[in-house]
View (tube, rainbow, N blue to C red):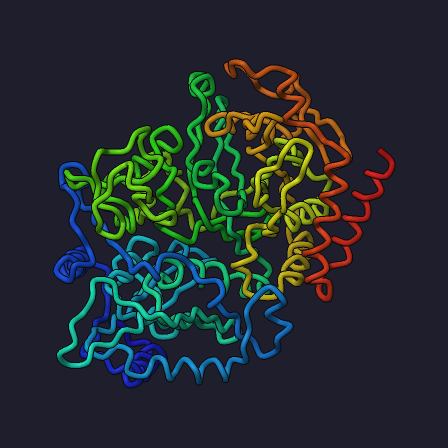
Length: 598
């Protein structure tokens, strides 16, 4: 418990509003975790897994209506609408608070109100942010214990005067006397609301993922991005990866990818055998979110504000991500995956062939010929980051790790080469601001519709995205040693519809060229879009069947496709035109000019 007078007063206020049957102040202890998981098992929310196969692991099944983030019910409530920008849902703060107070009134009847202190970032880091989440969901409490520093250590850090962020959450399913509970309580009317000028988060109706684990997307991205703009740092939807060469040199990169682009696979990459034999290795600092701040010497350093993984299960396998498979072998909460007959878990892509029988994510019998997926497409695992075999020794360094390169990427069957480097910082910001993935596969010579996701932050930016671009441009004034900026695309296809690049562990070859460019030890080929590698400078040793002709295809810069790309970018730029930095308009004009001269 705490003696912080503001927190005590706030908890008293919310208790009076939500009328729970009891209040529990969380201490984050092993005993508390054991008691709460036992409670969740008794309620039917958790199914204990086979202790020999998955020690300390549980399976949860959510309500079918509560399986993912709800972007259409996510709001940024600022005093002026333009502060939230055209890509965020907005409502005046006073109006939204009045609406939510009516929702929260009596919402915890029959339940326990849990007071959860959490710290995003290493406890003694200058970048750390402390929040206090009130919730009526024990599932949220045990998940937050994995995803953030939580409990008595956070109370100690706060003392009686420490800065903190109030985060209010309810599943919105009260239990009047005599009302039976359900295994996954939630409410069809959902709100995930951010008040960045307070700052605070109020979330109602959902018990799932980023809707309910408020330290994750709500605090670590939406609120943190607003705070970062005010304090001259960056809160980004990025992984942090360490690359260590045979000579003992370490290089750290941060990388942003939209969903379904192999972000976790890259974060936990295992180098090819030829690299491992030569002495290369990679380490993980963070798989999802990065906070980046210039240090006293003007070098950009990054911390991972989380302590756990909340990863997508489908597609994760020993071949695609061996480190993730090792990380989730124990002490993991699985949500909406399938259950095997011997008490283990399964999802599509885990093995080459599915088991003959499973219990699917909705608790129904499942067989390979039943015509429906066994695991939900957004099924998840929640596991401690320290269990990852490749975790970096400095992952909890309060000062962070130095960032030499920033990488952007998307799923593009055409247009984008395997890798290219920006000409300068402003050009790199332009590349990040226009990144995205194609929604449909591209046929030969055709370009699919591109869904833009600037810096992979479009759903997570806590203010106007045009102002966000301006903040990126402004950061060059604060960073003396600017990281190099690159774009990668693992997903380019040939005329036969097959991928031109093997991907997975072989992405290490691209990373090697990137770090060699950062160190100035390799030349680049100047093209109309940026710097690309020469075949002679690209490590293809041990890459069987990949010829110089294949390299030329995956690296091709086709002017006709890029002209269509420039036109396609205009849709996003037009939407945010009022706040779009003119420097990015200028970068687009420069690219158009280079294309016209080609």
